[in-house]
Length: 310
Image (cartoon, rainbow, N blue to C red; front, side, top):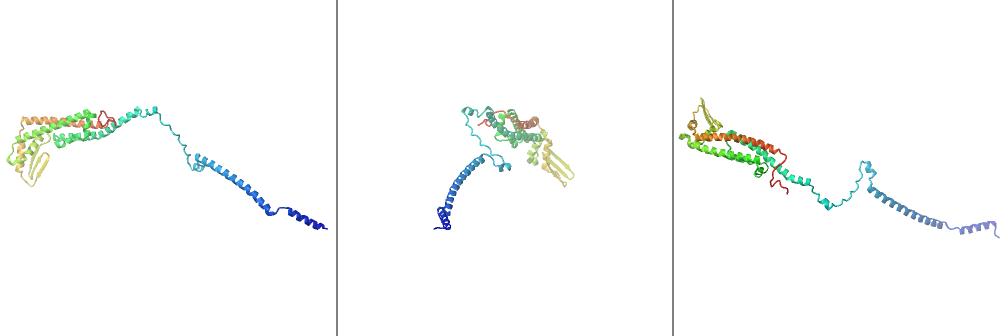
Protein backbone atom coordinates (compact mmCIF):
# COMPACT_ATOMS: atom_id res chain seq x y z
CA UNK A 1 0.00 0.00 0.00
CA UNK A 2 1.09 3.47 -0.80
CA UNK A 3 1.90 5.66 2.04
CA UNK A 4 0.57 9.15 2.37
CA UNK A 5 3.92 10.51 1.38
CA UNK A 6 4.03 8.53 -1.80
CA UNK A 7 0.48 9.50 -2.66
CA UNK A 8 1.26 13.21 -2.39
CA UNK A 9 4.37 12.81 -4.55
CA UNK A 10 2.31 11.01 -7.20
CA UNK A 11 -0.28 13.76 -7.21
CA UNK A 12 2.37 16.42 -7.66
CA UNK A 13 3.87 14.55 -10.59
CA UNK A 14 0.47 14.10 -12.18
CA UNK A 15 -0.36 17.76 -11.70
CA UNK A 16 2.99 18.82 -13.22
CA UNK A 17 2.32 16.60 -16.21
CA UNK A 18 -1.03 18.27 -16.86
CA UNK A 19 0.52 21.85 -16.65
CA UNK A 20 1.81 23.25 -20.07
CA UNK A 21 5.55 23.71 -20.45
CA UNK A 22 7.20 27.14 -19.81
CA UNK A 23 8.68 27.38 -23.31
CA UNK A 24 5.33 26.85 -24.94
CA UNK A 25 3.79 29.49 -22.71
CA UNK A 26 6.47 31.98 -23.54
CA UNK A 27 6.10 31.29 -27.28
CA UNK A 28 2.38 31.70 -27.13
CA UNK A 29 2.69 34.92 -25.19
CA UNK A 30 5.26 36.34 -27.62
CA UNK A 31 2.99 35.46 -30.51
CA UNK A 32 0.12 37.29 -28.93
CA UNK A 33 2.37 40.29 -28.20
CA UNK A 34 3.79 40.37 -31.77
CA UNK A 35 0.32 40.47 -33.28
CA UNK A 36 -0.77 43.28 -31.02
CA UNK A 37 2.44 45.28 -31.61
CA UNK A 38 2.06 44.98 -35.38
CA UNK A 39 -1.49 46.29 -35.26
CA UNK A 40 -0.50 49.16 -32.96
CA UNK A 41 2.52 50.05 -35.17
CA UNK A 42 0.44 50.13 -38.36
CA UNK A 43 -2.10 52.32 -36.61
CA UNK A 44 0.60 54.77 -35.47
CA UNK A 45 2.12 54.92 -38.97
CA UNK A 46 -1.26 55.74 -40.50
CA UNK A 47 -1.87 58.47 -37.94
CA UNK A 48 1.61 59.95 -38.53
CA UNK A 49 1.13 60.03 -42.32
CA UNK A 50 -2.22 61.72 -41.94
CA UNK A 51 -0.88 64.36 -39.59
CA UNK A 52 2.13 65.00 -41.87
CA UNK A 53 -0.07 65.61 -44.90
CA UNK A 54 -2.33 67.90 -42.90
CA UNK A 55 0.51 70.08 -41.60
CA UNK A 56 2.25 70.09 -45.00
CA UNK A 57 -0.84 71.48 -46.70
CA UNK A 58 -1.32 73.95 -43.87
CA UNK A 59 2.28 75.23 -44.10
CA UNK A 60 1.87 75.92 -47.85
CA UNK A 61 -0.96 78.37 -47.17
CA UNK A 62 0.17 79.95 -43.90
CA UNK A 63 3.49 81.61 -42.96
CA UNK A 64 5.80 79.79 -40.63
CA UNK A 65 6.00 81.06 -37.10
CA UNK A 66 9.77 81.44 -37.42
CA UNK A 67 9.38 83.67 -40.49
CA UNK A 68 6.86 85.87 -38.73
CA UNK A 69 9.11 86.07 -35.69
CA UNK A 70 11.95 87.35 -37.92
CA UNK A 71 9.75 90.09 -39.45
CA UNK A 72 8.69 88.16 -42.54
CA UNK A 73 5.43 88.76 -44.31
CA UNK A 74 2.86 86.18 -45.30
CA UNK A 75 3.09 85.03 -48.88
CA UNK A 76 0.63 86.89 -51.07
CA UNK A 77 -2.30 84.90 -52.20
CA UNK A 78 -2.27 83.98 -55.89
CA UNK A 79 -4.00 86.59 -58.05
CA UNK A 80 -7.14 85.50 -59.78
CA UNK A 81 -6.89 84.93 -63.50
CA UNK A 82 -8.35 87.89 -65.37
CA UNK A 83 -10.88 87.35 -68.05
CA UNK A 84 -9.98 88.41 -71.61
CA UNK A 85 -11.31 91.78 -72.72
CA UNK A 86 -14.65 91.78 -74.39
CA UNK A 87 -15.02 93.13 -77.94
CA UNK A 88 -16.78 96.23 -76.64
CA UNK A 89 -13.90 96.95 -74.27
CA UNK A 90 -11.30 96.45 -77.01
CA UNK A 91 -12.80 99.28 -79.04
CA UNK A 92 -12.07 101.69 -76.16
CA UNK A 93 -8.35 100.76 -75.95
CA UNK A 94 -7.32 104.09 -77.51
CA UNK A 95 -9.42 106.85 -75.93
CA UNK A 96 -9.34 110.35 -77.45
CA UNK A 97 -6.89 111.55 -74.78
CA UNK A 98 -4.37 108.84 -75.72
CA UNK A 99 -4.73 109.59 -79.43
CA UNK A 100 -4.15 113.30 -78.78
CA UNK A 101 -1.05 112.54 -76.69
CA UNK A 102 0.35 110.37 -79.47
CA UNK A 103 -0.32 113.15 -81.97
CA UNK A 104 1.55 115.73 -79.88
CA UNK A 105 4.61 113.56 -79.36
CA UNK A 106 6.10 114.18 -82.86
CA UNK A 107 5.33 117.90 -82.56
CA UNK A 108 7.11 118.21 -79.22
CA UNK A 109 10.05 116.18 -80.51
CA UNK A 110 10.33 118.48 -83.54
CA UNK A 111 10.14 121.53 -81.27
CA UNK A 112 13.14 120.20 -79.36
CA UNK A 113 14.96 119.90 -82.71
CA UNK A 114 14.21 123.49 -83.72
CA UNK A 115 15.08 125.15 -80.41
CA UNK A 116 18.88 124.71 -80.79
CA UNK A 117 18.62 126.00 -84.37
CA UNK A 118 16.91 129.15 -83.13
CA UNK A 119 19.53 129.69 -80.42
CA UNK A 120 22.29 129.33 -83.00
CA UNK A 121 20.42 131.81 -85.20
CA UNK A 122 20.37 134.28 -82.32
CA UNK A 123 24.13 134.07 -81.90
CA UNK A 124 24.80 134.37 -85.63
CA UNK A 125 22.49 137.33 -86.13
CA UNK A 126 24.40 139.04 -83.34
CA UNK A 127 27.62 138.35 -85.24
CA UNK A 128 26.14 139.88 -88.39
CA UNK A 129 25.24 143.04 -86.47
CA UNK A 130 28.72 143.38 -84.98
CA UNK A 131 30.48 142.79 -88.29
CA UNK A 132 28.39 145.26 -90.29
CA UNK A 133 28.67 147.87 -87.53
CA UNK A 134 32.46 147.58 -87.69
CA UNK A 135 32.98 147.32 -91.47
CA UNK A 136 29.75 148.49 -93.09
CA UNK A 137 29.38 145.16 -94.93
CA UNK A 138 29.38 141.40 -94.52
CA UNK A 139 31.94 139.57 -96.67
CA UNK A 140 30.73 136.79 -98.93
CA UNK A 141 32.62 134.16 -96.95
CA UNK A 142 30.45 134.96 -93.92
CA UNK A 143 27.16 134.54 -95.77
CA UNK A 144 26.87 131.06 -94.20
CA UNK A 145 25.87 132.78 -90.95
CA UNK A 146 22.30 132.78 -92.26
CA UNK A 147 22.14 128.96 -92.31
CA UNK A 148 22.44 127.49 -88.83
CA UNK A 149 21.39 123.99 -89.96
CA UNK A 150 21.58 122.66 -93.49
CA UNK A 151 18.16 120.94 -93.20
CA UNK A 152 16.17 122.51 -90.37
CA UNK A 153 16.92 126.15 -91.20
CA UNK A 154 14.65 125.87 -94.24
CA UNK A 155 11.95 124.26 -92.07
CA UNK A 156 11.72 127.33 -89.82
CA UNK A 157 9.43 128.96 -92.38
CA UNK A 158 6.77 126.28 -91.71
CA UNK A 159 6.56 127.16 -88.02
CA UNK A 160 7.86 130.74 -87.67
CA UNK A 161 6.94 132.39 -90.99
CA UNK A 162 7.30 136.00 -89.83
CA UNK A 163 10.73 135.39 -88.35
CA UNK A 164 11.85 133.41 -91.38
CA UNK A 165 10.67 136.10 -93.81
CA UNK A 166 12.42 138.83 -91.80
CA UNK A 167 15.65 136.85 -91.85
CA UNK A 168 15.35 136.36 -95.61
CA UNK A 169 14.87 140.13 -96.08
CA UNK A 170 17.98 140.73 -94.00
CA UNK A 171 19.95 138.25 -96.08
CA UNK A 172 18.91 140.02 -99.28
CA UNK A 173 19.84 143.38 -97.78
CA UNK A 174 23.29 142.04 -96.86
CA UNK A 175 23.70 140.72 -100.42
CA UNK A 176 22.71 144.09 -101.91
CA UNK A 177 25.16 145.84 -99.61
CA UNK A 178 28.03 143.64 -100.72
CA UNK A 179 27.15 144.02 -104.40
CA UNK A 180 27.07 147.82 -104.14
CA UNK A 181 30.29 147.81 -102.16
CA UNK A 182 32.07 145.85 -104.89
CA UNK A 183 30.72 148.21 -107.55
CA UNK A 184 31.91 151.24 -105.60
CA UNK A 185 35.35 149.84 -104.90
CA UNK A 186 35.75 149.10 -108.58
CA UNK A 187 34.67 152.64 -109.47
CA UNK A 188 37.12 154.20 -107.01
CA UNK A 189 39.95 151.95 -108.13
CA UNK A 190 39.61 153.02 -111.75
CA UNK A 191 39.34 156.76 -110.95
CA UNK A 192 42.24 156.82 -108.49
CA UNK A 193 45.36 158.66 -109.73
CA UNK A 194 48.61 157.16 -108.41
CA UNK A 195 52.29 157.76 -108.99
CA UNK A 196 54.02 154.81 -110.68
CA UNK A 197 55.94 154.01 -107.51
CA UNK A 198 52.65 153.56 -105.59
CA UNK A 199 50.87 151.53 -108.25
CA UNK A 200 51.23 148.25 -106.28
CA UNK A 201 49.25 149.95 -103.51
CA UNK A 202 46.23 150.92 -105.68
CA UNK A 203 43.88 148.36 -104.10
CA UNK A 204 45.10 149.34 -100.64
CA UNK A 205 44.31 153.03 -101.25
CA UNK A 206 40.88 152.26 -102.76
CA UNK A 207 39.84 150.15 -99.74
CA UNK A 208 41.04 152.89 -97.42
CA UNK A 209 38.90 155.42 -99.28
CA UNK A 210 35.80 153.18 -98.93
CA UNK A 211 36.40 152.80 -95.21
CA UNK A 212 36.44 156.56 -94.82
CA UNK A 213 33.48 156.96 -97.18
CA UNK A 214 31.36 154.59 -95.06
CA UNK A 215 32.47 156.33 -91.85
CA UNK A 216 34.01 153.14 -90.51
CA UNK A 217 37.45 154.56 -89.83
CA UNK A 218 40.11 157.05 -91.00
CA UNK A 219 41.13 154.81 -93.87
CA UNK A 220 44.83 155.76 -93.97
CA UNK A 221 47.19 157.82 -91.78
CA UNK A 222 50.87 158.74 -91.96
CA UNK A 223 52.54 160.19 -88.88
CA UNK A 224 56.15 161.39 -88.88
CA UNK A 225 58.35 161.72 -85.79
CA UNK A 226 61.94 162.82 -85.20
CA UNK A 227 63.00 159.20 -84.76
CA UNK A 228 60.91 157.76 -87.61
CA UNK A 229 57.31 157.49 -88.79
CA UNK A 230 54.11 155.43 -88.51
CA UNK A 231 52.03 154.19 -91.48
CA UNK A 232 48.46 152.93 -90.81
CA UNK A 233 46.05 151.46 -93.38
CA UNK A 234 42.60 150.11 -92.38
CA UNK A 235 43.67 149.52 -88.81
CA UNK A 236 47.04 147.90 -89.58
CA UNK A 237 50.01 149.91 -88.34
CA UNK A 238 53.69 149.79 -89.27
CA UNK A 239 56.22 151.73 -87.17
CA UNK A 240 59.68 152.75 -88.33
CA UNK A 241 62.30 154.06 -85.93
CA UNK A 242 65.97 154.97 -86.03
CA UNK A 243 65.35 158.21 -87.88
CA UNK A 244 64.06 156.36 -90.98
CA UNK A 245 62.59 158.53 -93.74
CA UNK A 246 59.15 157.81 -95.17
CA UNK A 247 59.28 155.14 -97.86
CA UNK A 248 58.62 156.51 -101.33
CA UNK A 249 55.76 154.13 -102.17
CA UNK A 250 54.02 154.71 -98.83
CA UNK A 251 54.39 158.46 -99.18
CA UNK A 252 52.93 158.38 -102.72
CA UNK A 253 50.02 156.16 -101.60
CA UNK A 254 49.18 158.51 -98.75
CA UNK A 255 49.35 161.51 -101.09
CA UNK A 256 46.88 159.86 -103.50
CA UNK A 257 44.55 159.06 -100.60
CA UNK A 258 44.43 162.60 -99.26
CA UNK A 259 44.08 164.21 -102.69
CA UNK A 260 41.22 162.01 -103.89
CA UNK A 261 37.99 163.95 -104.48
CA UNK A 262 35.04 161.56 -104.84
CA UNK A 263 32.59 162.22 -107.64
CA UNK A 264 28.85 162.53 -106.95
CA UNK A 265 28.32 158.96 -108.11
CA UNK A 266 30.75 157.66 -105.49
CA UNK A 267 29.22 159.89 -102.82
CA UNK A 268 25.74 158.56 -103.71
CA UNK A 269 26.90 154.97 -103.33
CA UNK A 270 28.51 155.74 -99.99
CA UNK A 271 25.37 157.43 -98.63
CA UNK A 272 23.17 154.51 -99.74
CA UNK A 273 25.50 151.96 -98.16
CA UNK A 274 25.69 153.86 -94.86
CA UNK A 275 21.91 153.95 -94.65
CA UNK A 276 21.57 150.28 -95.55
CA UNK A 277 24.26 149.28 -93.05
CA UNK A 278 22.37 150.99 -90.23
CA UNK A 279 19.22 149.07 -91.18
CA UNK A 280 21.14 145.79 -91.32
CA UNK A 281 22.53 146.30 -87.82
CA UNK A 282 19.12 147.16 -86.34
CA UNK A 283 17.33 144.26 -88.05
CA UNK A 284 20.04 141.74 -87.17
CA UNK A 285 19.87 142.72 -83.50
CA UNK A 286 16.07 142.41 -83.52
CA UNK A 287 16.22 138.99 -85.18
CA UNK A 288 18.73 137.85 -82.58
CA UNK A 289 16.34 138.80 -79.77
CA UNK A 290 13.32 137.30 -81.57
CA UNK A 291 15.10 133.98 -82.09
CA UNK A 292 15.79 133.68 -78.36
CA UNK A 293 12.13 134.35 -77.56
CA UNK A 294 10.93 131.76 -80.07
CA UNK A 295 13.37 129.18 -78.71
CA UNK A 296 11.69 129.42 -75.28
CA UNK A 297 8.13 128.85 -76.51
CA UNK A 298 6.63 125.60 -75.11
CA UNK A 299 4.47 124.81 -78.14
CA UNK A 300 5.02 124.58 -81.88
CA UNK A 301 2.58 125.88 -84.47
CA UNK A 302 2.47 125.07 -88.15
CA UNK A 303 2.76 121.78 -89.98
CA UNK A 304 5.57 119.94 -91.73
CA UNK A 305 6.61 116.37 -92.45
CA UNK A 306 8.25 116.11 -89.03
CA UNK A 307 5.06 116.91 -87.08
CA UNK A 308 2.89 114.24 -88.71
CA UNK A 309 2.43 111.11 -86.56
CA UNK A 310 3.45 107.81 -88.11
